[in-house]
Image (cartoon, rainbow, N blue to C red; front, side, top):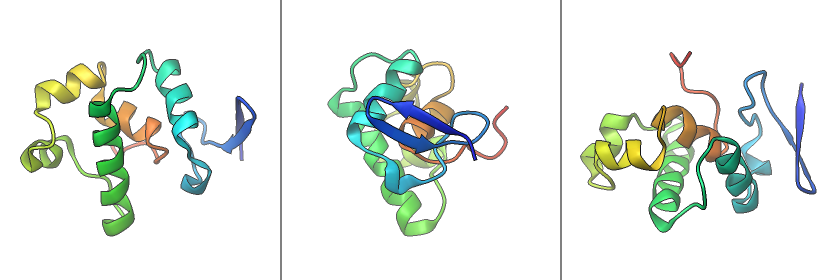
Length: 105
C-alpha cells in the first residue's frame, strides 16, 4: 500500500492519493491536503462541510452526495463549488480523509 509523507505524519493512500485509513486523519493533514488541491486556508465553511461528510460516513458508511449536502441546508451547491472548485465531492472527500467517490474519474 502506498504511503505519503505530510509534515511529520505518514499516511496510507491509494494510487490517486486518497487516504485509506481515516484514523490517520487530522486537521493538520486536512489543511496540507487542501493546499495540494489548490485550496487556500480552510475556513469555517470548509470545516463545516468536512465534518458533516465525516459524520455521515461514520454513521451511514457512505459519504453524502452533493445533492444531499445541499438538501441539508448546510451549504448551497454553488457554495460547495466555490469552497471546493473543480470537483467538490472529490476534493472534499479527499481533504476529509475518505476514499475516492465512486464514479469519479
